Length: 410
Image (cartoon, rainbow, N blue to C red):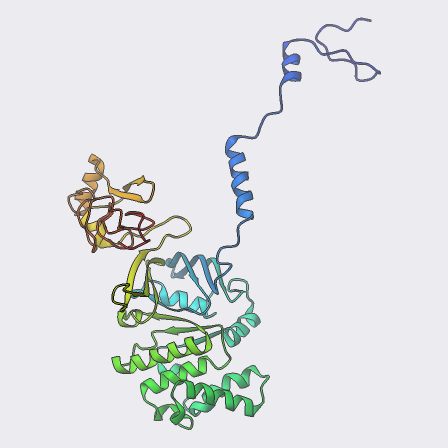
């Protein structure tokens, strides 16, 4: 019996007739469709990321896109909005910011007294988001020490300075009484408090109380020492003595120290100061000693950098954007050695700028708000002003704008 043309072959039998017809021929000759180019690119990027080390793998403190939201009566307030921060082991650094910037919220999270809403935070290998109550208690006792601004919160009033320092060791356990007393005495001696061993807090000056509080915080040899406005209630001379105690602890014990402050004088005492604005790190000041090759004289040089977070966000200094009338959007140009940032000159952009009360939107030439002069693209020696104008965290020589001189030399 003959099979009608175009019908499929029988399902059984040792042989099959080839399919006929244009549709069947096309189907048999059609190759397997390739993965879309976009999907292949995503797979390639994912494979490349898997081979990279984890963000902050070599840092003692690592905050990755940290978020903290507070809710009160149905109103949500974002104290931290995707903050990134890395602190290396052995650093002595400051966190600077105005009231409400989020610096105290960050400090409470690092101290184990608060839990972030989202993101990641690790200190000395401890994940601050996944710790249970028992692990959090051990973290506060063994890993981190804390010094409050209010001296009354740091010391027990009915114990002597020596007893205050030995108490954390006693609560931790593992040491004999003689060993605890010896270790506490060494800490007090290191911070020039030998004469205060047998005095109670009300018999100590404000500076002596804060230095004793530092000794208490160091009693269990923590990896990190956190201090929240430790000199806020002290005069300048006493504050210098307290800060000298922090420097001694950092140099002698190698303890990583993070100080939260709004006092610029305190921020000037550290090699690295990170500014927090609107719940994110906005800029960073690095200080280092440079020697004049001709005279051999040493001088301390401070340079400010803008912070570029993992999402590629950059906070431009307000004085820069105001001087050039920048608002809502800007034009970016990628050059071989910098990124140019330019005001929006379109009619819509000019109207927005006038509505905001900004400047005239003049292009980014001239010397701008920093110390360097030069043209809009920056000079080859790193001294010129970039498209935003002036030297500083965005313009001048460096990764964002300026020329290929020393990064941030502006």
